[in-house]
Image 1 (cartoon, one colour):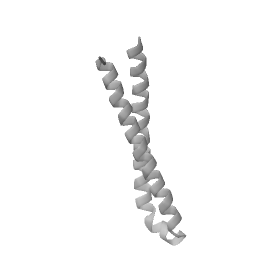
Image 2: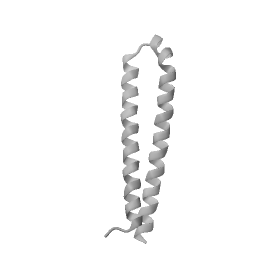
Image 3: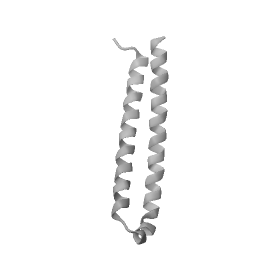
Length: 79
């Protein structure tokens, strides 16, 4: 049977993977968007891009936090 710490570690790992995948998808969407717009359109789209950049940063931080929590819980479970 799995201990409570292992279950929490598994949930944290799943959350880390989820946020990493969402971040990657958003990053590639923005990258594709940049390839489709011209310099004139960039000024108009800049507020939207900045909002998405902040969201990507937040998801990256969340993914990192959940990854560190997973590693720590893994060490604790193996003691």
